[in-house]
Every structure is written in structure tokens, then in C-alpha cells.
Length: 147
Image 1: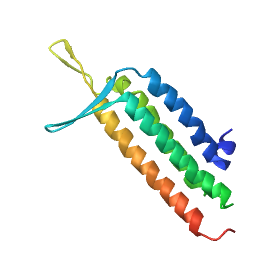
Image 2: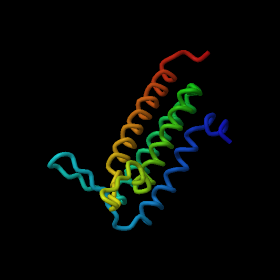
Image 3: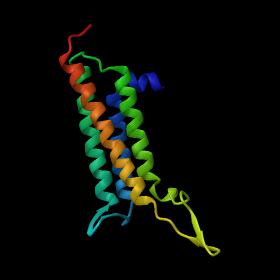
């Protein structure tokens, strides 16, 4: 299964597109609130998941163009890209489940942590790292001679 995904990554990313469109329609009115000092960024999950679907479609087109030109992508870079992408998605989809980290109690009162902003930050950081690996993979495969 993993070898098939690495051999044809465009099918994997094209498969994620309808899944994320469905998740977008089922997400409801929930929002992601990110505050940085005095600035608040409010993004609805609907728009975030639709953006993700469009982004996955663009990545699928990139990998399909490599397949079409018969220039295979580097298997290691493809594996790293897909793994980092899945980790970033997992963190984003489970952002509220990480509140147990750093639990504190003060005089017997349990303090509630909200680590969702930190988890979203790490998810975005890993996402950009995966985009970096994808771009390296795409352009090295595109411009290097076929062996």
C-alpha cells in the first residue's frame, strides 16, 4: 500500500480532495481562533478545509505533471513529504485533544490548559516544511536528467 502511494502520489492527493470537501461541509460553524499579541485571526473550519482541498489538488497536479513527463519523483523526498503532510493534518484535526500536556493544579484546583493554538502553530510549521520538501522534490525531478 505504501509503495503504491509513493509510486503514484498524485492519486493519494487527488483522493484527499473529495474527503476534505466532505469534511468542509460537515464541519459546521466551528472556528479556529489564533491570537498573536493583540491580533486575532479567526478562520472557519469550512474555509480551512476547502483551502486544503484546493491545495491538495494543486499538489496532485504537480505530481501528475511529473508522471506525465515521465520524470519520477525521488522516493525518499516523496515519503518525507507525505509523512510530514499527514502529521500536520493529524495535528490540525486533533488540536483540542492535546490539552493534557502541561496540566497544572493550584491548591487542589485543576487548571484547564488550552494548547490548541500551540498545536495549530506546530501543524502550520510542519505543513510549510512539507511544502518545502515537495518543492525540492518537484523541481529536482523536473530539471534533472532522467537516469
